[in-house]
Image 1 (cartoon, rainbow, N blue to C red):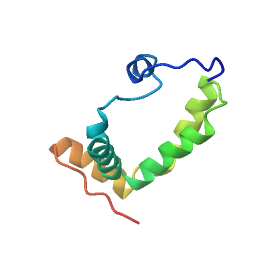
Image 2 (cartoon, rainbow, N blue to C red; image 1 turned 30 degrees about the vertical axis):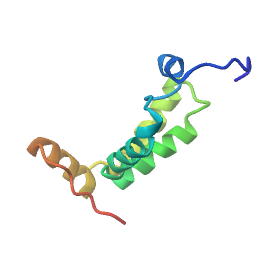
Image 3 (cartoon, helix red, strand yellow; image 1 turned 90 degrees about the horizontal axis):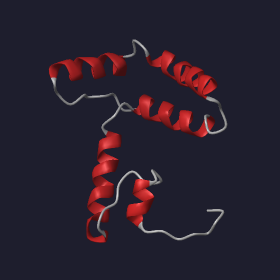
Image 4 (tube, one colour; image 1 turned 180 degrees about the horizontal axis):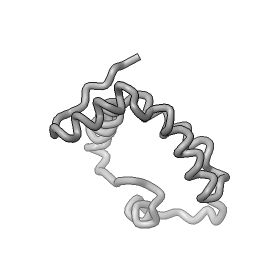
Length: 99
């Protein structure tokens, strides 16, 4: 950003700036597939992950790890936590409770 150098999508992928590169014709389909994948996860887990991303930007590794654990701890033993483990062990899709 600071150099204002332009680069192609493949280079952005190689630099780790984007997770994947898809053809324009596949963009909507791939976006919806990713949205469905995220929506299939525990709502509380997704919210905790988003909170971790927002709050850990300026933290060192130890502080970010501690924050991650503090956001995870309240979910241990919850219905979603138990369902996720049971579904994984049974090799089936989890059925999380939606708020």
